[in-house]
Image 1 (tube, rainbow, N blue to C red):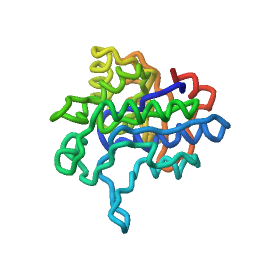
Image 2 (image 1 turned 135 degrees about the horizontal axis):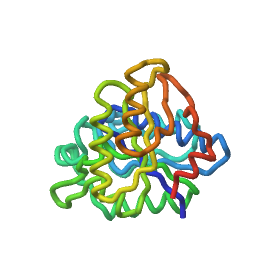
Image 3 (image 1 turned 45 degrees about the horizontal axis):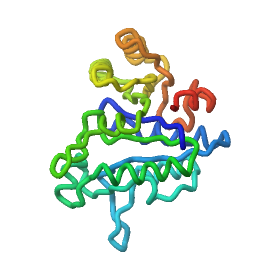
Length: 228
């Protein structure tokens, strides 16, 4: 079975998929057998035949160069750009934990490392009707260590600290923080870096600039050590 790492974020649109793709890319280029998984993916477009394209999975596959099938990357793909619990209510089918277990364990059996990306922030609900499933249920179900992706800009201290405190209360161990959209020399963003470290006790593992195709300061060896 694989070693795993969960990628969560302070909110939606902070760059979780981008960072997850760079993690997969770094490990893949180092010759490690790595895969990607996301339980539920919303906000996707359709092919000419009407089938949905799992956009986040496609991005990760293209940026990383892995050959994993898109179908194995995500069992639930929705069109509406809303929380998965609402998208599934509108479109169906509802997210079920037994399906997540089966599909995730299948990926784990086939690969040495699996990067699991959450939907939105850590409190995002995946299902509230037939079953009540939140992202933290997946983290606990598979005993996943996590890293936190945050935008480097204004407001990030609040988002980082609140997420950290919530995950600490819920006993979800965080390995560190990755800042996205970071501008070296920007006084506020560099202060955000220091303040987030001081207020959480976590290390900022990497500060990623716009357009970067690598994770500054994070080698494959350092990345692989985060997995469990």
